[in-house]
Each structure stands twice: as C-alpha cells, then as structure tokens.
Length: 470
Image 1 (cartoon, rainbow, N blue to C red):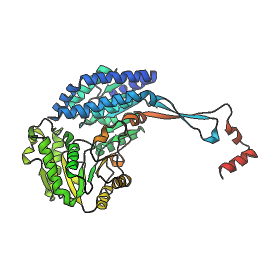
Image 2: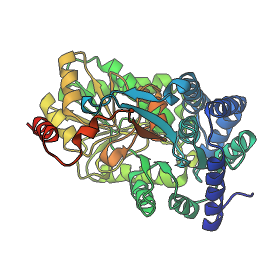
Image 3: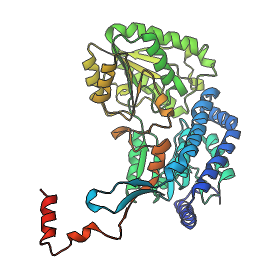
C-alpha cells in the first residue's frame, strides 16, 4: 500500500492494524524480536539519519544527532528489553481482609493500535522512543513524522518498512491536513509531541472518539541560580542545555533567574562558554541551524519585539555570529526584559535566553509559581534545605538539580508535562504502563466471605454491617 493521504486510506490502515492485532496479539517473544530487529536496523542507519537531519535543518551537529537521536533510542530499546519479562508478569496484590480468602492481581494488557505524532526538533528520538514503548507493551503502531523534516521522515518510513509488516507498524507521511485526519482516528491511545497550541487541537480531535492522549508539550522552563552557587558552573550547564540543537529542545531552559549582583558575571561566563565551545560559530559544525524559515522568522520577531520594548540583546560571542542566510541564529542573551514582551509570554524554542534578576530568593520562587506550570525546572544550589524547599514549593513536569536537560535521558524516570506543558508520561516503565491497560482481576475462592452479607440483613449480617460502619 502506498503512503496513505486521505482519511479513508488512514481509516482502512487502522482497521487492518486492529484486525491483525486481534488475530495475534504480540506475546513476549514477538515483542523481544521486534525490538531486537528494530535496534539492529536503526544502528546500521545511524549515520544516514544524522546526514538526513543535517540536510533537513540546513546544518545540524552530527555528534548531537548521534547522542540525542541515536544513543537515546538505543538506550531505550536496551532498557525495555532487559526488563520486559518482569513488567509483563501479573502483579499479585493483597485483597482487602474483608474479602479473604479471595485473591487479587493486576494484569498488563496491550491496548491495541497506538498513534504517534512526532515533531521536527528531534525527529528520530521523539518518533522512535514512543514506538519502542508501545511495541514493548504489545501494541501495533501508526507513526506520523513531521513534514518539516522530510528527508528524515522518508528515512523513518524506509526503516519501519524494512523491519515490520505494515499491519504491525506503519509510517504515514503528509502535511497538516494528514496530521489533522490522523489525530481524528479512533486509536486506542494517541501520543503527540509538539507545541501547546497544536496540542489543544490534537486533544480536541481525539475527544470525538474518547481517545486517551499523552501530550508532550513545552512551556517556559525556568533556571534558578541560588545565591552563592558558582556562576561559571551554572553558566556552562545552562548554556549546554540551552544551545543544544540551537535551543530547539522542549526542555531547554527558557529563562534564567539569578541574584541582581551576579548578572554581569553570568553574562561574562556565558560569553566565554560560547567562544570556547563554538569557535567560529557561523561555520561551526557543532552548532545547529534553525529547522525552517518560519521558525527563524518567529525567533527574529521575538527578538525585535523585545528590543522595541526596551530589552538589551547581547549576541554571543558577538554580533558577527548571526547568519540569517543559513538560518544560524546566534546565542542571544536578553537583559531588561518585562512580562509584556512576547519573549516572556511564549515558549522561545530557540537560542534566546532572557536573564532576569531577583533581590530575594522568595521573590524568585514567587515569580516561577505565578507562571503556567513548566515542562522542566532547573535549580542550581549547594544548600540542600533550600533545594528541598524548591522541590516542595513548585510543580513542574520534571526537575533537574544543578544541571539541565539530562533528566530526559534517564529511562528510569517518567517523562511528561503537567497542565499547559502536557499530560501523561512515557520512557521506560512509565511508557509500558501508558500503553497498557492495567487490568484488575479479583479471584473469588470456593468459600466466599461475602456469603455472610446477603439479604435478609438480620442477625449476623446486621451485626457485621454495624461493625463495618462503626
């Protein structure tokens, strides 16, 4: 079958996958074999994927592609395969004493057919990790890669076709109209990664079918530097997370909060980091381009709006690093920002970093809590009690203490947002649970204690009811 583009084609493909799943739900052996073959085929194509992503972006760091879109996928496959047998095993749970000698257990049953809509910023990672988790849970999958990275999407289609029959895993290519029709399909679960605005549309489409959704969105993830924390260390770790993939990372630090007296030293440390890590930034193979003209124009508009409203923009290491012709957007610090600027109202999703200052730590914490709940929160501090206070006082999709971004790569940690930054989790065991139905099973014994609780409610039954409602 050719790549489906119409709603009728999509529904026919979904029906074929569902029929195939019902005819033979993947058992442990099938799941392990699927993941092993996917790993081998993907590993053999790593360099091809790095080249395809670089071509789609205009320039993308090969090493960052191998790490962020290669290593993460291979690690997820290995993590799931090592633990899958244990995860699939029914879990015995103790029945309430009132119902003894009955027994209870939880069985983990695949849902059926899962839909995955992937974005353009990490077009391999954010397509294949949900696929791995869904396959591990025993589902069939329909995958919709981003149309903004067409070479990578085509390579994903070729990879999937080489490993799986289309009745088990299929890749759907196409633009926004295809994506909208895809989101409206009656999947057994739908995972979407992308912007909050598009996430609302996806959720609306899914609601018509009561399709359960996992939404991995974004938001404005703060980085708080506490008084006394070494600025060189904080600047290096914030820069590493912010300028990875030229800031096109959903968990990238979106703004920094630090003591007023530390601002200038922080700026100097950031400038030194960029000069050292990205020499000749305009031509550096380690600094990525912005993925498309529209996204570059959006970032330029955010910067212009901030400047027009009084912010000071510092391009790093200098103004000469900017190269619009090749969509190289230089790392940029913004000083003197206000909340009415677009850059403080929208997710930046690029290498622009507003630097805010505070007089007291309580002020910084209050500012973070006054904003919509972020996908990630970063806190730099050597005071354990104050760090615990931040953990207790804030709500975020995930937290990284004394570093940035790295929590995403921990398979043992669930990944997901909260409120405007998303809903639901995946990665590792969390992904297995997301794509499984945790089926509760109650096993009655030959003799049932509930026989004492049947009408007429007199005598012993009356006394038991009084005891239980005492």
